[in-house]
Image (cartoon, rainbow, N blue to C red):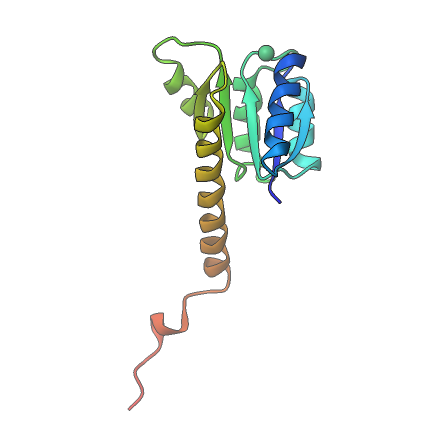
Length: 146
Ligand code: MN
């Protein structure tokens, strides 16, 4: 079961979103501010983070920037959740290190597609990392035998 960390200060938002995601079979944990979000990204080891951008203590931009700087958390995909519909906002999210971007109010079908695409990509990345760690495939450098 994939674990999703929701970082969201608005109680209505995280209540609804966590209920919907649990119903889809996800394990869900919630952080209520950016500081707690960064802590839980390390302790809970989520497979993906849904990050509200407007957060108390540490905002979503800064939290994402810091998570992407840390070796412990940089590999965890982050989807930015923002109410800002301004042009240039997507670029700002990607610049901060977010892997994808979703404008609130949440459109569940679309968000689930984004989540599933990133989780699938993460599985591929992990496999690639494992292959790299175990060295080149035997066929890569093997000399042909007579
Ligand atoms: Mn907020």
